[in-house]
Image 1 (cartoon, one colour):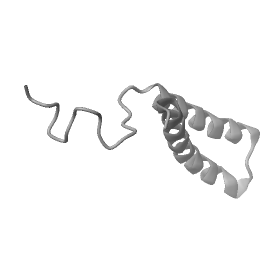
Image 2 (image 1 turned 90 degrees about the horizontal axis):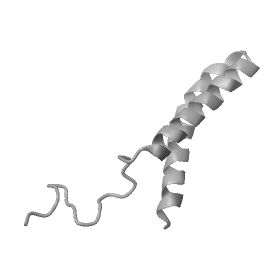
Image 3 (image 1 turned 90 degrees about the vertical axis):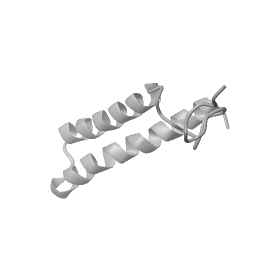
Length: 73
């Protein structure tokens, strides 16, 4: 799979995971426009933070590395 698509998918998963609690707290009394703004803000912040992160691991391991670290020469 294309690495960019992987990053987008992982970012979407993190963003939904961050926005859902904000939404679930807002639902009982009815969601106001201000609350929708907070839900969207949580989604955007989590998506962008995950997407721009160069430390997000998308695969179980990277080529040339093991759990113990890079190969020793």
